[in-house]
Structure formats: C-alpha cells, structure tokens
Length: 423
Image (cartoon, rainbow, N blue to C red; front, side):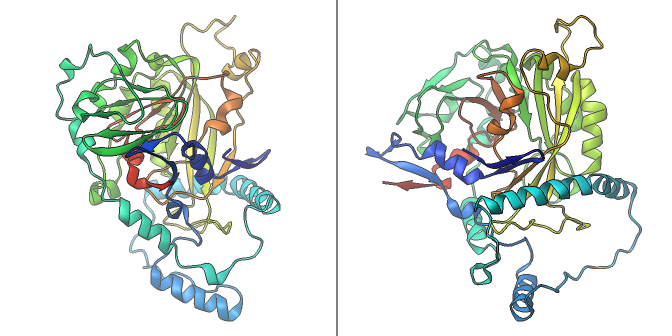
C-alpha cells in the first residue's frame, strides 16, 4: 500500500513502501540464487529541505543555538522587473496558495497522528540529505545504450513485428526488443539480461522501447489495448533544459501530434504532469486538451516534503516551489452514447458507478531524489476508473505492474543498480 492516510483534501503517500511491496517478493533470481529486491532506500532519504551546504551548516548551527532557524538565504537583487511569464506564475501561485496550504497542513497532521511524520525534529540526524545525494551520484551515470539504440533501428522493419514475452532469467539482445511490444506475464518480479546488463521487471507489465517516431505502434499494434487512463510527464522545453542538456525535450507541436483519442477508450482519463510554469499549464488547458478532444476536469498538486514533514522548498520561494501540478481531463470521443452532447462527462460516468473526480486534491509525499520520478497514482486514481483498468504511461522512465509503458528511457530505473538485493 502506498497510501498512509486519506482525507477530503487528498492523500499522504509512501513511494518507497510502494516499491518495496512490488519487488520484495521471493521469486526473482540472479546467478541462480533466489533473491528479494528493494529500491535503494537512500534515494528517498530526504531529511531536510533542499539548500546549499553552506546555508545548511549555518541554519543548523543557528537552530541548535536558538531553538529555531532565523537564517535566510542571501539572494542576488534582481536587475529588472518580473517579466510577463513570471508575473503570471506569481498570480497562479497566489490563486492556489490558500487551498494547497490548507490541504497540506491537514494531511501533515494526519500523517503525524498515524506516526508517519515525527512530531519533533531530530537535529542530530540531519546531514543535508547527504545519503540521498551520494546515492544519486552513484547511479546518475546511467548507460544511455538503450536510449541510443532507439535511434539506430529502421522503423519500417519494426512495423509488423509480433510482441515478445520475457521470462525470469531470460537473456536477449536489446536490438530484439526495440520498437516491439514486450510483455512480462509473471506474478512475481523477474530479472532479465539485456546486452549483458541486468534489469528488474515488475509483475504483469508491458512496454514499448522506442523514440517518438514509433509511438504510433501503440495505436496500430493489436497487442496493445485501448487505455482507460493515460499518464504522461513530458520532457517540457525550457531554458534550463537547453542550458544543462540533461535530456532531450519535446516541442508543444509534437505533443499535439500524440494520438490520445485513438489510444484511449471512451471517456478515458488523461493525466499530465507539469511543473508550476504558468506557460505550460496554460498550454495544456487551452491548447493541448482541446487539440486532443479532452475535457479539462481537475487540477491537483503534488507537494514534496521531507521525512520530517517539512516542504522541500519554502512555499513562497520566488525561484523554486515545493509542488508540481497534475492537469486531469477526460477524452470526449464522438462514439460516446449520451442523449445529448451537453451531458457532463463526470455526470455520465457517475451514472456508470465511477466516482466524479474532485476539482482540487493534494498528494503529499517524500520525493525520490532522482530526476523526474513521480509518486505512484494507482491507488489514488482507482475510484475514478473502471475495475481492472488498462493504463498507459508515456515518456516513462520505469515500469509499473499491470500497466503499459512507453518511452526511449522506459527501462532506465529498472536497471539493477537502482536496487539492493537481499538474500
């Protein structure tokens, strides 16, 4: 179970506990030994808010002496007024501020009552997240061989390939799975070798390892179903991505070309992750969803907190916010059988026994320190989906039990180096 507690405002989730439940099953083998696996605990060891080492040292010293922190980060004075985008982002933050803070404070109190968050801070245990940062450095030099292979395969030679079913301890060449449906039907996690590198597979998962030029295979290949929920965390274009060159971004025009209506079922749920950049939020609501024939229904927030129950950044920080946004909509396909086109989608689904989606909810959790890892949504979204739904994640960096995942990095966080083996 990922849910620690639930209220009218949202959920407190334990992402690490969720992963342990998936992989701590005694059936995966490596080198002939029965093993259980755990996702590296230190990657979730976020004990204090994010800050520079020098600021952390000063803050901890002052807190120890005076009982509460009064050290503020020194910031450079702006040489210019806020630009239009920054002003719009500030307006957005002010609009959602009260509702999000009310939800987070309530959920944190529930978490404390459940014994999940401590009621008092243990100053001796704070190390500016040294364990998490060290763990991240040890795995961040990921081999990009799989991603590069996606661009070296002729798509025309992959169009008619049948899917491949993997089994525990299989050893295959990466070239044999590129642009091809891959399924693992086992009820327990498995270890497979891809070009002599070991990867863990969760139970009952499917994936397509490809670049965006082959995304249409999800639509045309009969081995993939139509999906009841489509979740995506696109690599949005922004200045910092271009400057740091950490990963390839995608243009807004390419996002519009994704065949969401044809991938989904009637009234399928569409969930798009986005940072608090107002331009992207505006684009999803006003351009992307209409272009996909998706009706906007809700806007939720994921608030990142430490294991001590503090937000990872000051809520009103002008530079970085401790939250990300989930924009949620429903596909409105022409084949929906309603008496009138004016029937609200959520009302129509409620008549079929599916709960209406709340307009505003918060998810509170300790984040993984790896880039772009999001909390699990299975238990959060189950009330708003049919029983045993078919779910798809686009731009995925990991696999999910009972889901289909697509992306050119879809196996990135399945590499065995992200896990600790337990005999």
